[in-house]
Image 1 (spheres, chains in turn red, green):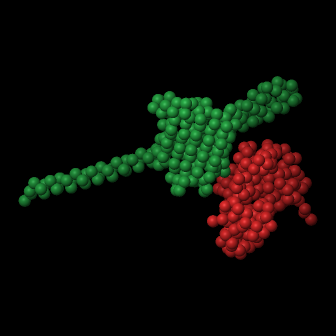
Image 2: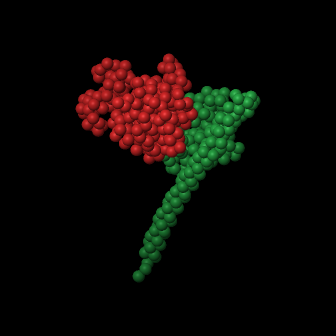
Image 3: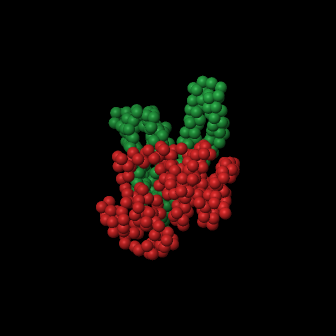
Length: 214
Length: 233
């Protein structure tokens, strides 16, 4: 019985990708089931193979990383994505954290760090750089950055949010946004959790308080 | 029989026609010029992108390798640590130059993130207070995004390098069917009629005009500077 963690690796730089794949293949816990070189084929491969964890670059041809994440999470909200990048700018970290990725890691990281991140994400935890976590904690304390409750949720969740507070049922939302009933329900659940409310009525009250009801 | 009245009317009609033709010709010429200007700016962007890539892939890779080797040499062969620091400094300068020539972040994350990045990188090592407010809703087309980014880059560089400002504010907002950018500093300001800072301003204005945007600048000696841009979407 094969209990290895199944991975997809997406990066348009062939040498870099092969290096990562080789590194991972030598690890007893991992199995790379598919390699992709652009965002579009990554989304297709992820939908087809359902990997345990997906490792991906941000700057990729055909469909950039952020759009690919959005697209994938739209179909598979439970997908576990680890972003592997050369960008050490804080703006990238914030954007990818908000996008719904579960982890962010620089390509110059060691094999041990990469393995640790994959294991943590596979177990349902997240893995983000300390510098980002520090900024997020600080902004939470001062309340400076989180001016809008919508900053916390992904673009797709935002669409669902507005339909929920407009009084649409989950079935209607699924139809309007062209997603399965289960996906719509998952989005709704995550919005409630992120906004720290327990049901739709509370969510609507919160939206009203924040002036988000149209 | 041609009376003087009829001749006059014919003459008038003829003049009107040729005036219309001239007007149409002028409009067409203006359009051609604008298209030409747009193409020139786009060409410059493409050139910069290529140079940026070359810098990153060429010199950047060599300096990366050099930094790694020097890091090892410092530990294993007792090489002076300041040598490794110099190499690291050179690498970070090359990366920054490459990023400013073609901001990858604009393609990857969009205008809002790119403006945040620009303000942070240009202001973080300076003795000044910066604030930025962005509310642009949808992502604009890429030629609008690069226009806004380049104007902001030029204006902020002026404010940081020449104006001696200690406070800079950046606003980017959606106004109806246009995008508005405001950059305000409290630096030494200047006389708009003197040519001292003229070149940067002229190029900002030309660039805005090429993409049918309105560009306005207000400044006076000792009174800071306010640059605003209104780009149709």
